[in-house]
Amino acid sequence: MQWAAGDARRRRLPLRVVHVCEGALAGFDTRTYCEGTVAAAADRARAAEADVEVSTELLSGNVVDALIGQSVSADSLVLGNRGRGGFAGLLLGSVSMAVAGHAAGRVVIVRESVAGEHGRIVVGDDGSDCTAQAVAYAVEQARARRASLAVIYAWNMPMVSAYASRYRDLLENASREDSRAARERVVRWRKDHPDIEIDDQQVCEHPVLALVDASAAADLVVVGSRGLGGFTSAMLGSVGHGVLHRAACPVAIVRPRGETS
Image 1 (tube, one colour):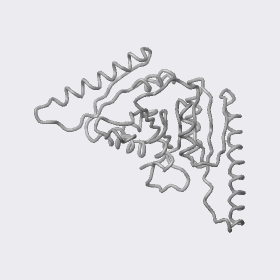
Image 2 (image 1 turned 180 degrees about the vertical axis):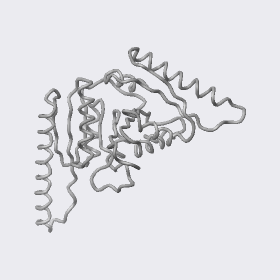
Image 3 (image 1 turned 30 degrees about the vertical axis):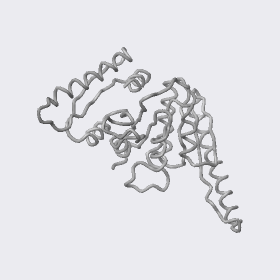
Image 4 (image 1 turned 60 degrees about the vertical axis):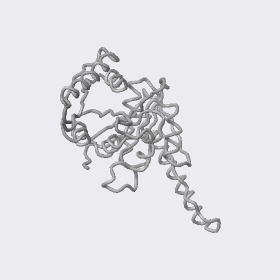
């Protein structure tokens, strides 16, 4: 709640606190309990950020469907990483994962404990169509926080037999070309956003590992909803999935508004 309230203040947006009240239980006043829950959450938001306009909405039905529906009109949807019904050993609850994979726009997953600010936003660049949307949101966050932006392009070099030297040479040439293209994209983003300090890294490492490592000194990691090679029905790619489970800071999954699940 504190993260959402702070984000609303920095970006001068109103905050709507929603709670989904699922089925009634025998001998238990579910409606009253749900009303109290959403009211208490709103009070926490107002206490955290007194200048933010806070409203509440009580929803009914399936939690995942209701939250996905809210994402259609929201600038972004902010969720915790694990609900009360999750197993303690799971790093990301089923509700958060389902919503992150199918929401209509941006979803931010916030872990229970968020350390102090680092003044740095990290965004993953995989050269896909989703990258531009992810970078635009990362720039917006960096500007609102007066933070720097790190753009990370990472790739895996496939294992090749020592005898397949020609194939290895082709892979290395392709990697160099991809890195060059990544640097050129950053040059354009610096030109478009001269008020933001943007640095870039091109590393030969699994993208999940690179982004998770960077998350240790970041306030937010931003990734696109689906990378290169993803199936259309898999709205959350393997990189987004891996980063959500392992990042040390909040993670934003950015999905272009034009996509449908």
